[in-house]
Image (cartoon, rainbow, N blue to C red; front, side, top):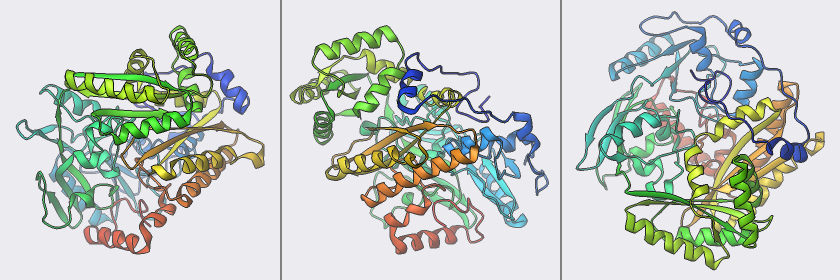
Length: 530
């Protein structure tokens, strides 16, 4: 059963390692566990549905609660305090294209709004129903999750859009294939959600972002079905796939997705390399990204994030030995951790490893082997569970991300971290912020920043703190010329900053596009564009 007010399966817990609380107390002050609203109180606050449950639609209170919010920090504050705000009136569980068509028809007749729902992992408000006069139906696609077709010769697989990451990979693995798309939300997020938000997996350097993997599919819109046939390439005008990618539920409901898959790799390993400081690690990582070596991942942490990573890794004896070794090799407090992913045939992996380590050594990098990297791989989807433990210890944690060209990266990083660290000074609270580069390109990189602050006893104050920090960092990103989102999408939280990237004419074009496919304004209104 999924947690109703936190991350993940309620049977899975993650305890903070012994060094974590002293570390946070030193940087932020002692945390105090907040008082969370009990489930029965929250369920008792649900307003009655404004539509009658019929034809497969459900008004079950628990279903409505589970589909009311995503996984952003404002969602956590709302759920933990019991001040959820708007709820969907009904939840739909379509099992076929015919069901989706019937649901759109029902919405057109009844005046209801439709909010597509994949895994509920959005951190920017994609799945949240907004308050208003019209009733809202949350459309859960989880029952449309089968592998419908597999063309092994062409390496194309067609799934129902509601398939979750582990189920997708399990189905492909049976036939010797992988999609290779592993976002941190992999356990719960869905293929349709990845397409609709332009998702990026941790090994995108090798497998590509979802736009490279997305080959075609089918979307049901209020104006009719949109079929996107699959071609290796086409010069027949603008690519209709680009209308669907990043559309965030505004065009219609994605029912089927065809993706480009790869044979399972013969060998895969993850190396840990430590650099003496950020500047050396940054130059080495950029050179590796621009070398076009067959790497599947490069992930470079700042000194601050390197320290946090080592603390949260647990395994005190192993990490202690690793840190002693790194200090012995001359890498002190300013050290930076680079994780290098190598995936493919054995010979290619060995050759790429030699080249990557040679480049790293030329900038003072010291290889720590594969033990730490393999530990990261085994637990890489476990990290979000630490959000539950941090909340219970009295600390809020959130993330934000951007992408920028190499020439501007250092200034953008400095501006974002400064905005966060100074964001709560007026109220006498400290913020701990640190970053890593997780998706590298020849011309630039993503920048992924995590920040923590102490929770107040008042939920409204926690929301004010988050909004102050989010706004300051978002302004720093936009003013420096970064994208407002590299992988999380727009949703509600990033909507005020989209005009800086798209321009007024671009926004107007998007609005016209949405009106064309959804003339009645039924589909996920208030997200992506006003």
